Amino acid sequence: MAEKSKSVLLPVVAAAVFAGLGRMVLQKIKADCLARETNVAGPLDDKTRAWISDVVRTPRQ
Image (tube, rainbow, N blue to C red; front, side, top):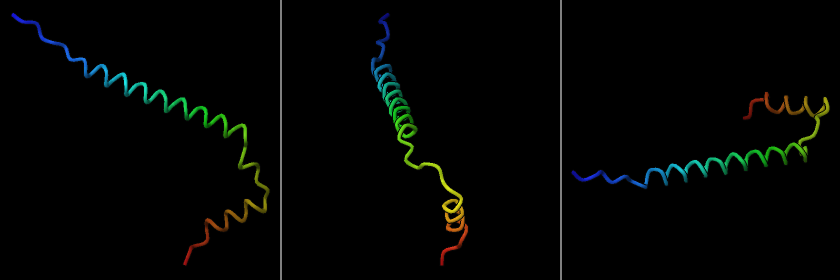
């Protein structure tokens, strides 16, 4: 009786998907660290916070 040949395709595809997901996670972590260090948004004062709230709540025509 002949042995069943084992497919190599599934493990290769699984490894590629796993590597891609790992790369995406690392990029996200690096981007989050950079965003935290640069602090582009900065703290908001009360006037700016009120203006944003007003703009968001006012219906557009």
